[in-house]
Amino acid sequence: MVASTYQSVSGAGQAGVTELEDQVRKVGEGAGELAWGSFVEQSPPSTFVAPIAYSVIPFAGNLVDMETDEEHKFRNESRKILELPDVWVSCTCVRVPVFTSHSLGCGYFRTTRQSPFGYG
Image (cartoon, helix red, strand yellow):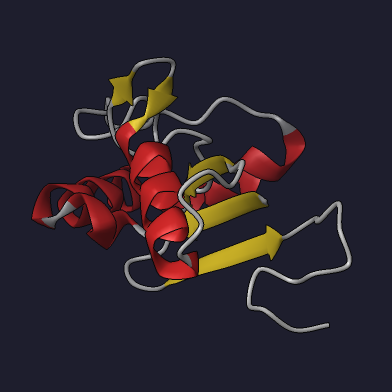
């Protein structure tokens, strides 16, 4: 299985919400300049590894054993839900600059004709 999750700042709690709000305010009217590669001063990050306003960060959570804890959690939960404890899972968790909502893109590849759910 190969998956990518797109997680809002609220997934990091109130600190994540506050950080996005503060950075958006700091950029203010200069936001359009970012489209042209211009430098726009932002508040320094404290909750995330980089500024989150007007950007995405391919790193959600904390680094644990060469992956983030969010990626680790996704792999374990996928195995549990699918009842396939040995299924191979590759996941990238991305933090996106929205206050609420998460999204997931996922592909499952099999090497046999049998589905993981017992049919066709």
